[in-house]
Image (cartoon, rainbow, N blue to C red; front, side, top):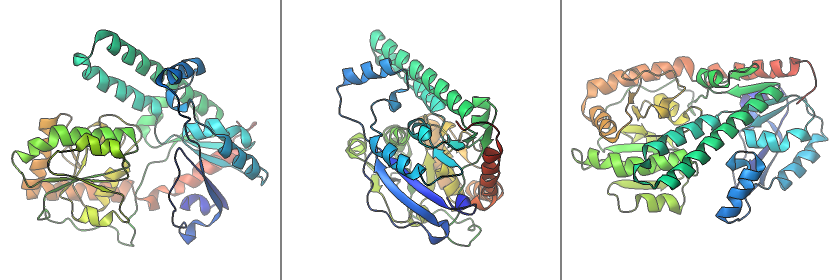
Amino acid sequence: MRALSGLGSVDLLVVRDRPLPAADDPPPEVGLGRSEVVTAGYAARSSLSRVVGWLASGRPRRLVGQDWTRARGVARQWAETGYDLVWFAHSPTYLALADRFPVPHVVDLDNLESSMARHRRARRDRLSSGRSVPRHLASAGADLLDEWLWRGTEQRIAARAAVTVVCSELDRRRLALPRVAVLPNGYELSTEATGMPARPTPPDVVLLFVGLLTYEPNRDAVAWFAREVLPLVHARRPDARFRVVGDHGADVVDAVHGIPGVELAGEVPDVTAELAAASVVVVPLRFGGGTRIKVLEAFAHRVPVVSTTVGCEGLDVEDGRHVLLADDPPSLAAACLELLEDEERRTALLAQAGDLWQRRYRWTGIAPTVGEIVEAALARPGAPS
């Protein structure tokens, strides 16, 4: 938003699937012309009707049953203003509202849903041994169909948009289509500091996870780490706490209930204090899309990171140099313990990770790419999508 506001007047329409609590005004340098938050919720339906509606729609599951009436009404009113360009975040927003704006479109696919569906399907395949054969086949077939539908949806969007944006070279290769630009996710410290020196391990042992737990991959990661990894850490470090920061519901509370050492902090006004008290940031994602800002945030605040391979997918990190990567509970626990107990190893990892963030993932260096994308979209000949 800061980068776009440096190019012209910007209006912001936020569409959510549930009401948004009262929010602070945007920073003055963003310079929004106007902004509005609307809800596009899902109607209550039985499981059978949802499945029938999905199969009849020919669209991915998440795109079926959401009510965009209010958002489309606001978009119709705003379109009368006459825009030069509309920047859409995520494919559902574009598919629901693009026809309201007869101008060039940029579509920001910061998560490739097809990749997330593929990861989810692979994970379920690995866990299928205890399930009945018919149930496993039904789930596998549904996952495969959803992945295929998402892939077709993303390709159609990329073919129609003036420019499609992804957050990594890996995702650009996956789309393998023209007019796809890479705009990396980035992170900027809230002060003028260019970084913080490496610091010793805090006296308390805190394994920190930061992320919205309304996002399925984050919910799965927290439950898996709490159940499968934390007990292995406790075998050697019983004082270790797994602190989870981010909006969560009752389902997360139920998933970790009774597990020693788990702390659900919920939302916090400023994550800086949480990072300052953290011994290690853990990113135990088993599926997902895009790249994880929580990794870059840890790099910027000089907190070492232990992650699964999926958790760092798309980022230019090297195992053992910037992060420690592991994909099974014993290896994840061992990596956490290594960074808690080996100060030399920890210091070397922090130095390399901080340098990578400075060179590649600060918004001050990424922001000019936004202007290049806008110029390319406006320069594209032919009718808007």
